Amino acid sequence: MQYSVIVCPKCKEHAQIIESGIKSTVCQRCGSRLDVRKLKIWHTTPNLSDAVSVRTEILMEMDQGPIISDQ
Image (tube, rainbow, N blue to C red; front, side):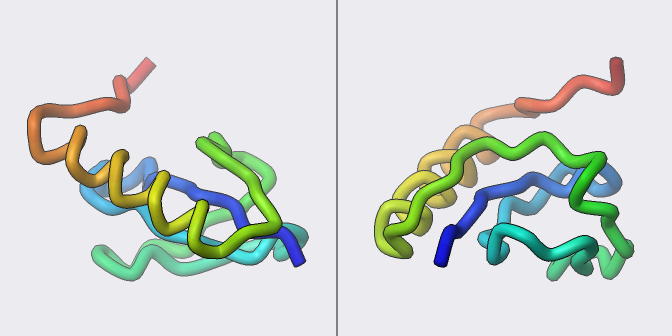
C-alpha cells in the first residue's frame, strides 16, 4: 500500500495522509470534497511512519506561514 501526503487547497490549513489510488477524499478540517487527481501530492511512500513524519513537517511549516499560493 502507498500513502500520499496532501494539503487541502480550499482551506490551506490542513495536511493529511491518504491512501494512494483513491479518486476523492474529504478535508478533515473544512469538509471540502477534494478530487485527488487535481491535488498536489507532497510526498508518496509505502511507509506510513514516513508519511506521518512528512505530514508533521508540513504542518509545522504551515504554523510558520502559508506554504500554498493561490496561483
